[in-house]
Image 1: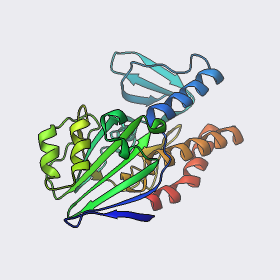
Image 2 (image 1 turned 180 degrees about the vertical axis):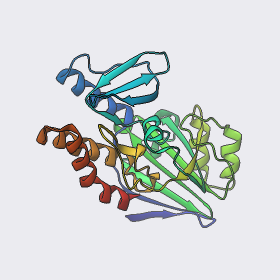
Image 3 (image 1 turned 30 degrees about the horizontal axis):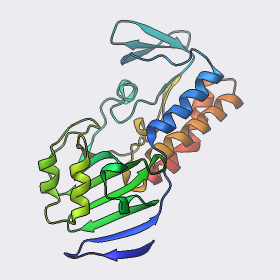
Image 4 (image 1 turned 180 degrees about the horizontal axis):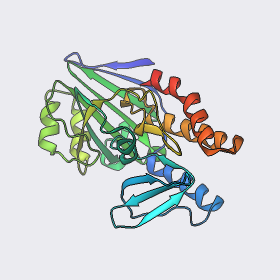
Length: 263
């Protein structure tokens, strides 16, 4: 990283070359690949509420609308509030870290033209930091502001805050920070809760993937990365072993230590 500017009030900003993929764009690529490989494989508009392992070794996944789906295996890739994990191991103990993240995606044309650069920027100050970087080739700016020492523990990607609260959390910071805050349509806030990685992921024909079994905080930007790695190794194991349960256990053994180190 090369410092390009140091600002007043002990708040520094450092620029570094940054290339990132907007998550909706990544999901669109993955969705298109699945639909090409297996038309009809994706079904939307259901909410899982539990599962049952059937006597013949298959799995039935139950949905909130009373419907169900059956298969040879169940992979719970359903995130930090995983229904599948809860069915396997009960509720996961979570520890509040004292950290809150403010998030927003900003159309770049709302910001000063000088801010449209192909770098990620990290502003650092006492008990606070802001990271922002361009998305979609500079069409959007992603904003994340982390605040320490708060007591707001709602762990959700969709919990909304107000511009006034966000401005207040970064009172006295540089005008560029406040220009981004003002340009956000809806500021979302997200409490960081930490969980220990599971020592055992699955049982029988059921396993877990991604944040459902090794939820990560965002500071190394590894949550989606580790889930993609999980998916690759799971696919390889299922291709190599005819016995589904053996494949699931081999997948878990291959991934458990790496993901635990990342957490």
